[in-house]
Length: 608
Image 1 (cartoon, rainbow, N blue to C red):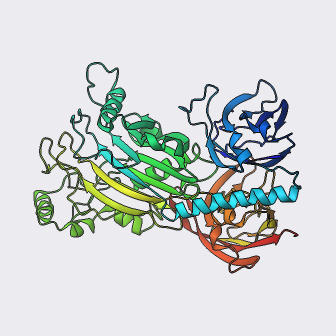
Image 2 (image 1 turned 180 degrees about the horizontal axis):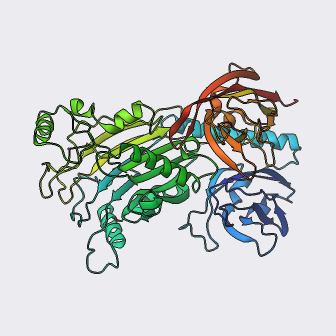
Image 3 (image 1 turned 90 degrees about the vertical axis):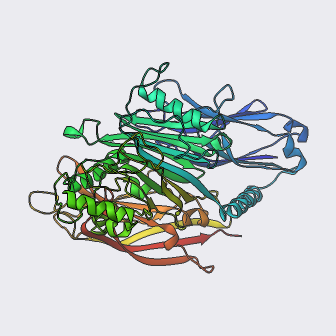
């Protein structure tokens, strides 16, 4: 008996205009065709479909099986999404096939990231019952989970992050003072004002800059993705040995310039998954000048809100849906030193005092005047984000062709920044944060950081010892919601988003009309679409708070709850726990609005 289980896929290609697919898997063995059900509107389908196929003897396994993934189109031809080929010959010796496998095109290439397919296969000489096969599949899952758990204990991704306002001047031929070679799996390079006279042989500045980076990294690295908006550019280069570990790669842009349309300011973003860890990188160029602090805060919110409509689930703020968000760029926050106020140019006395403190390395004294640090402390921007200590001189505004000297036209400032936000249990560790003072072609100095990002694997869907898992959400209340209509009230309701929600599940509350402190009474409990508690432990529940208008609906904000907070412990099968959280949107708290309630997780064991 040949047992095959098609569990799930991740990072599939989008086949429709809305960025989704309706995927199914089909394969053929000994002339007979098999297929899974079609899953609707997803790039990460969960089929969990088992096939038990009678075979005459083990010699029938001397063959290969091709699993093909298609998007079902009710009108036209089904779109081919990718395939994986499995050699069954080793199954006859008692070995099994278990784990993730990259999907390739029809020619067997995987230059385009088509996602991955998770399958399990084994062969037994006697006909097994369904229960026996499910136990064997669970055993294979446990073996895979054990391997991944051991790997996960030391699992992380070291990422080099670089940001530089190029100053509209050709960069130096040697980028080594800024970007070290052959040290990290992933390099993410964000640039601003990156428009200059390109070299002969290139058609535009973008081509020239990418060629400069490719030449610097060499043949060991490949460009994973690139995106630009006006003079803002973000490029990711990956060690070729790890290319198959990255998928679900998407890009987005948001302009915040004149009329919120012009691309002289704004952000460019690339999101991806490394194994099951989701990461979003954002490169931004915010409004300039001393007096534009509030505008810069607004730019950040607009960038986050804008790219959130494009990346990932497209239904939630990137800050609550990605495990890690890395925000870099010329953020243009200045120093409010002395009595300069909103004047663009400091007085000679103020400038001389700042330069003296820089020479004396009294960076902490100057940093106490840093606009971004103070705005974050007041909760006006980047709530929940972190950044390292900038123990080096300000990176703006420096004289070109000088190692580190400042022009009195502006206050010296740390305009070039790298921040991060994380949802994982383990904290991000900043390995280094520095400045490339020797690069002198711009009025900004390049900044770099190496971040060690915690990463993880998602366990398999099923556990044969568990019949079902239920998650209930009750006693939910919101307090101090912002007014959403002319009467100063809101018609609030909740939407739930989570990996464990089944298709067509009721994931929305009732509408509570005309209240800024709504109490929600109709949130039913949900039966998870998988039965592995360890899978649920690594998931998140995103609650979207919305306002219902006569003609449409608008988003008030979000909160995200790690399910590890609510899982039963010490062998228990049920746990209930209260939560109380800020409501966020665009990387800031929505006033003093909060949401509270109780989550219960109930595990029902399978009958022996």
